[in-house]
Amino acid sequence: MSQPVDKIGNWLALPVVAALTALCLAPLLILFVYSFFQVDFVTILHEPTFANYAKVAGSETYRGLIARAFGSALLVVGITAIIGYPVAWFIAKRVVAAKSTFLTLLLVPLYSGDLVRIFAWRVLLGAEGAVNRSLMWLGVTDTPFGGLLFSPLATHIALTYNYLPFMVIGLWLAFESLDDAWTEAAADLGAPAVERFRRVTLPLTLPGLIAGGLMVFVMVAGDYLTPQLLGGASGITIISAVNDLFGTAFDWPLGSAIAWTMLAILMLCFGVGALAIRRSSFISEGT
Image (cartoon, rainbow, N blue to C red; front, side):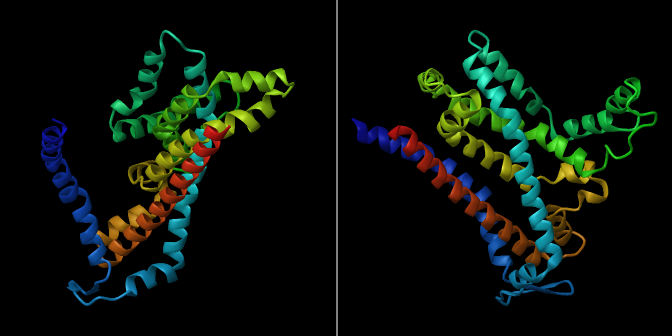
């Protein structure tokens, strides 16, 4: 009886596999092939070479932009983790009847488009926005702060706001599976709150932290709109460089090489994260 059901399941999965192959894997494969070509004026030379990867590795500009992208991603991961831990703990351990309501409210910002959220932050952080007006009303400043909007600060505020729910969801799942008996036992043994968090809560919720951190890291590193619309002069990123190479510069092979360099680094991070989750989960089960 199970064999016919398995065959039906396999046939039903075929369209999904075909769609993923055609829409995800095939474009990546095309990019990978193009990364070994070169451009002569407006003609793509189909002569395999590693020159594009050598150019990416040897260019201080591209290396700096890649490092900045991953540095921003790590910063946002750290900020979302600091904010996400108490929020996830509160939803998992203190909310009982309205837990689904809190989770829905957490995801409400994601129901709107990226442009809506970005322009909302432009309104809030502008010279006549709510933040500057509040600071002037409180007497902190007599004139609006000009450095709030179109700055790295504005970019990272919006990125944190956009991707915080993904970190909270990962940590919430980890807290849901955390047995309170462990922290209660540590408290009975006289461990202070900081020590209980460092030696009990953090190790046992580490898989959720890593999972949420990976999601935030990947999305921040690949974000295009937020730095462009909120970063001002600092909005030049490696993603915008790839966009220019595929557009006005007409250097598809170099753009493909940069894209695959980013993808390779992200896949390496995913591999390390998966190993860390597996190891931390094994340690948690062992305890």
